[in-house]
Amino acid sequence: MKPTDDHALAEAPYDPSAFCSTRQAADLIGVSHRTIQLWVENGALQAWKTAGGHRRITMASIQKLLDQRRAAVAAPPAASEPVAAGRRRVLIVDDEASLLRLYELEMSTWDMNLDIVKAANGFEALIRIGEQRPDILVSDLSMPGMDGFRMIRTLRGDPAYAGMAIIVVSGLDRPTVQAMGLPEDVPFFPKPAPFAALRRAVEEALAPAAA
Image 1 (cartoon, one colour):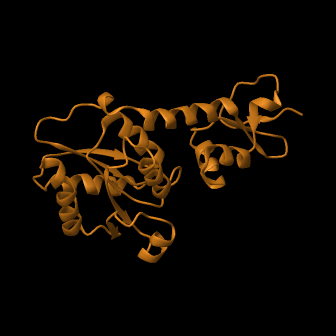
Image 2 (cartoon, one colour; image 1 turned 180 degrees about the vertical axis):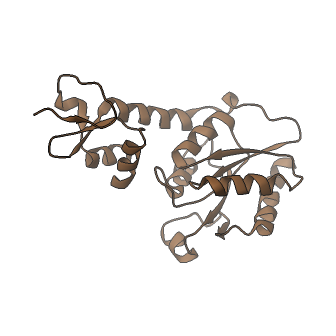
Image 3 (cartoon, rainbow, N blue to C red; image 1 turned 90 degrees about the horizontal axis):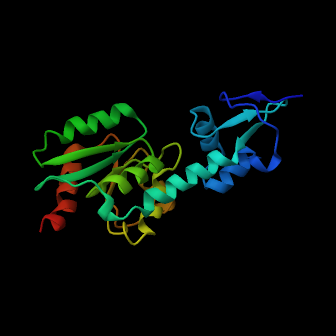
C-alpha cells in the first residue's frame, strides 16, 4: 500500500535510507519530538504518512535545516550588514507576534537610536545573528523549534558570539530558569516585560560598546 502525501511531497521510489521517523529526526537535530511535529506541520521539514499514520521525514530536508543552522552560527562578523553610525542593533526573539510588535513599538519611543530585528524562535534568531550581528539580544526562553536555552548555549559556545550581550524575558519563574541552566550573568525579567527595567538593562548592556 502506498503512503499518503503529508506536504504535497512528490511520489518517488521508496528508499528507506532517505527517510527517518520523527523520533530519529528529533535526535539528529537535537530538538524535542513535539518540535519536529510542529516543523512538519508548518512545512519546515518535508514528510509523508505511511498507511499506518506514521510520519516519515526526508533526510534531505533534515540535512538542509542542519546546514542552515551551521551557516547561521558560522557566518563571520564581517558578513553582517552595516549599522548606521551612532545606532545600535537589537534582536528581539519571541514566538508571539503580538509581543514582538509590542517590543518594537515600545523600544521605538526610547530615543536610543535602536534598529530592531525580530525572530520567532532560537533557530531563526541564529540566522538573524549570522546575517546582521546585533549588539544585544532580548529573548524569550519557551519557544517552539530551538528554545532560548539551547540558543544561548549555542552562542556562548562559539568564540565569535560568546561575548554578545543577552537579556531574557520569560514567563518561566526564576527557580525554573536557574534549574534549567540559564547563565548567571544573563539579566532575567519576568513576563509581562517591565519596560522601564528592561530599558535600563539595555542601556547598561550597550554602554561598554559605546565607550
